[in-house]
Image (cartoon, rainbow, N blue to C red):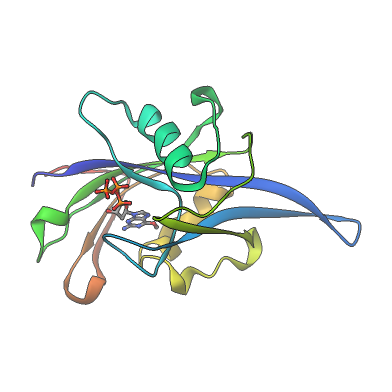
Length: 166
Ligand SMILES: COc1nc(N)nc2c1ncn2[C@H]1C[C@H](O)[C@@H](COP(=O)(O)OP(=O)(O)OP(=O)(O)O)O1
């Protein structure tokens, strides 16, 4: 199945809450395009000739006005998303975590960013696949998977260990 590539970035930070360190992740409410209304990491499609890392740097700057260095991006997953009923939506996602960045996340036309505690990510407001892998990936595991979407944006099949483009 033909798939377009996307890069998605999960910025993380540690804040002090009543004298204790609290890990947080930045998500944003999608304001336009596929998945509008959902919480996502900043990201989007690769442009022609771009590497996933280059796209990740560009998308973070465009969508939340934050500067990340390519080397600061830590790969946390490669996930193929075949859309069985809408093949033109099928995509291959390169996911990164990034602890080091410059600038304050700011809303754009595409995304309204917000920090969430890592132990209380509102997974029900994200794409349905997030609950299957994101907490593990943010805890340090590299996730490779093929997660097929069906009608109603439900995950209809799960294959771990392989990110299959066809
Ligand atoms: C768990 O997180 C995600 N799961 C799934 N299944 N898909 C996700 C997740 N986070 C982001 N995505 C997808 C959704 C979209 O297909 C892309 C991002 O798309 P976007 O429309 O923002 O792409 P751009 O290239 O920025 O848009 P333009 O076409 O407007 O340039 O990632």
